[in-house]
Length: 566
Image 1 (tube, helix red, strand yellow):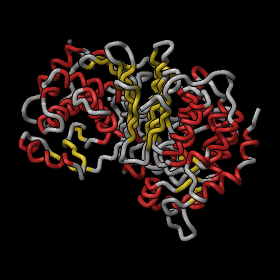
Image 2 (cartoon, one colour; image 1 turned 120 degrees about the vertical axis):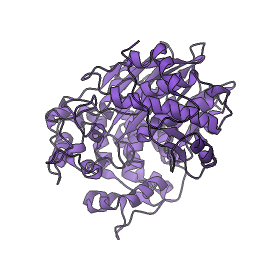
Image 3 (tube, helix red, strand yellow; image 1 turned 90 degrees about the vertical axis):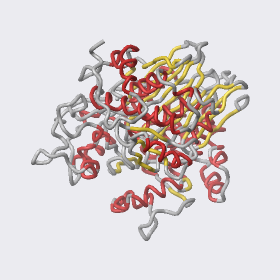
Image 4 (tube, one colour; image 1 turned 60 degrees about the vertical axis):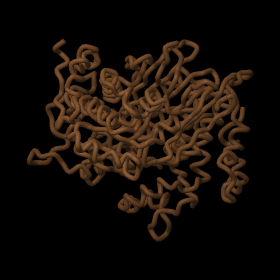
């Protein structure tokens, strides 16, 4: 069989193609021709599709699918490439949640690769000597913010169960691009401009900056051989190469030697486990919507928003109108109030998921939605009756919807062996006492909400997700109602202006037609805030003639498809 070394023998020719502006698909052509199948005779029989945040990641995923790889095989390839070309958003130093639909079994699974706090973590982790919360940036740019990464263990677990190609085959595309280079993407360039202190790291400076200390120009070649070497070790030895041995030692050393050191240990890394959890599903009109359960708050909040909207006249209001935005904002406000009060890691606190989604509870909560905005929604009492994304469709009809993150741009800003470590522990509450307080081994509350929607016939209708911190919930919910209630094709729903409410101001996307709704919303009592709301929605949709994908025009993403997809 062809080895990774054989691939590298063709580098000079492929690098020449790259430097002279050949399409990204040609850059991968050498890899594609040499990647063998683990099951000779298998060929994808249906449409293939990848929607992700960068063309090179899409090309890698599509190549894996064309070779007969599964949706999970493609997910390994896509994530490995995204960690290279958009390290400000995700990578092997972060965490993720994945929904996986098995078409043959007609079964949905949820995989939790959320980071965990070190065993030594205590509730006062982000308080100063006077008991006051640390400045957020100070907390982020420190060893204290780094959780045990979970992406690789999640991918490993899913690949063991649903992969078809060998683990190493799925990583070779990212290895190849890391060592030969890729064009500086516009969003990575902009992120480097906004984070000038990264140039102080000699390793980051060598990868991302020119000789004068400026971020490399858009389109200029970026080479990250350290990341390629890290992935090569993981390809040859499996995910354990990351969680023990030399790589783990370097991660721990970087965290503990930081100017604001953390307490991560090699034992913390060695002990990490990804988890399979029961997907969280609920009805919305004639559809069944599924997402992630806690420790993500995304699924609960998403289903609450939809459940509340179903009990209002939302579907009767004109699309893109102030009346519709008012109802959506109020439903979101109520969901975020409950998110803050009740959501945390279910392995550490009792999260009343069933009660929060109980139809009777939602019917009582919706009575708070009137013609005028609530000033601040209170949490309810349910006992009386809360990055990057890619979506993949393989040739057997299996689907991956996966949201992955390092939290802030470039995570903790700690670069180790070509990848950035997350700052995910700042997702814990800084003040102790609530369900999302810091504890050793605990997973911080997330907002990630990968979603899969089923029609009345039980067939997948839609799969999508988004990055965006707490705004993820609103991005996903508004896109769902755009498709399901406003009957927009998925690409149009993704491109539509963003809006929402996180139990504060009603937010409208700057520079869009929704700015004109501000006066009408203010007349209803809304405090309106106009923001740049840079979602990164990527999804696929079944429609009358096949499948179509959508990639958020606010980012660098694209959709790759093979006929008979549309």
